[in-house]
Image (tube, rainbow, N blue to C red):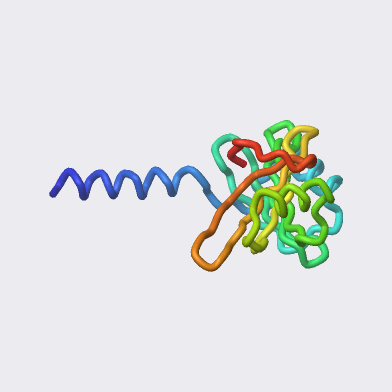
Length: 144
């Protein structure tokens, strides 16, 4: 019993140290400059450290965004909330073909390097699926 309690407590504390909120004043100037140059209209910005990356959650035009930047200010990954009607035609066609009977509940667009992916939450009356597709509608086994 004691071992289970200790394990649970250690997992809790290790998860708390993984992502740590930080004030904007603690973000290095090179990171902040890169962020404001890339997202000049960002509002409601909240900063965290996730491992060795700076993570900012923010809104642009009432849409959720999240970006990960390295210590040199380089953007590693960018996530943006999008509407299902904004999906590329190839992605919509792939969903209609491969997931009949499902509807789109949520869509996030990711830019990783120079490649774009869509993480799509699909639902029907009894199931929920999360898939990742590239811009051509090809389902990829990628964790974003």
